[in-house]
Image (cartoon, rainbow, N blue to C red; front, top):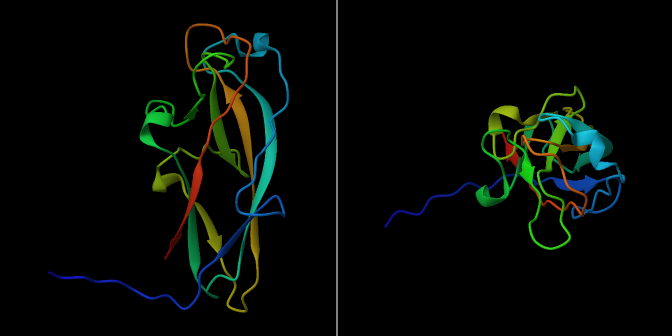
Length: 154
């Protein structure tokens, strides 16, 4: 047997919207009419993720992840939960501060956090929105998706 590992000097603390690392981002109520067309987006909601206490002078890559069964491989979005009371034909899309999509489970769309040599916290802004990815119209109901965050030390 061969066991290998690496110790790093420090780890990062994740702070979402100035609070904890496990926050709920509340999206606005929108009319299902706004998502009539396939590919439509509505209800853009900003949120921030700050990394604190990271190793100085390093670049960290932040990736949004989800269980593969809870995402759409074609759109790269989070799927809505299913069942009684949940909206159908609605997904959740995450974008970075430049407006580019953060594809779920895809390190190629990671957000870089460049930590200054002097150290300190670094923040980036993101947004989340409702997304219509089906030819059928969105139905009214609740929307609930879950993603985790991975910070990859470079």
